[in-house]
Length: 239
Image 1 (cartoon, one colour):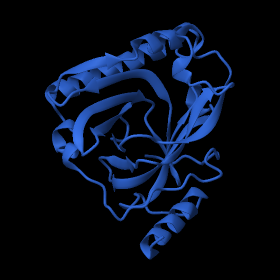
Image 2 (cartoon, helix red, strand yellow):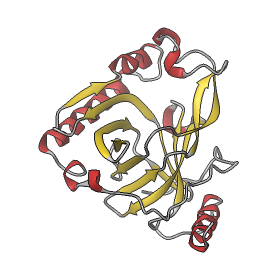
Image 3 (cartoon, helix red, strand yellow):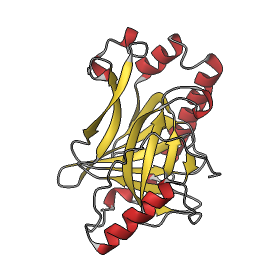
Image 4 (cartoon, one colour):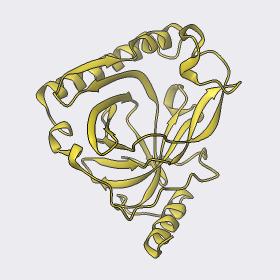
């Protein structure tokens, strides 16, 4: 590990355990991007945790890079089966646990504006051939000293390089409502957020118009390490 990497890792470790920090993270800082299981008010346990490297953190935008090979936490069924392989009827009611696994394929650039009920992810094929944007509808991210926490809202939008788009996971969104993970009022708020995101896509506003598909990570960045206390309970701060 280089001296710069050691410094960044040490700073991130201190921040993760509540050490004071500036209002924004610096490029190269390593933080955690986490999702809590569906429960009101971010009260559910963390079931997705992804160590990421900060690309940019301003009052307008948080951009982070999840590198290929990053060790992450993800949910699986109690018997180890992938959640996606469970029939839809029992996908959200079957017992679950969490496991660690390396992120396969190419990396992911995640962009989030404070207060937006979604984040925008960029995907590439190998050789940096840009593939698509992905709008992940989610709870506005709650910041804490070691990263950000959110809650996934099941419904997503895929945006192609030609600016065409389509809804994704509408079946899972409907099933989440059937089993009580989203009540009618909350589901309508998610739908409204999705419509706002579609308006943004049609207008080709930021971040789609900002050229992020041409961005590349700093080659000196090392893959962040998943900490042993990845599921710790933080004190949230104002975004």
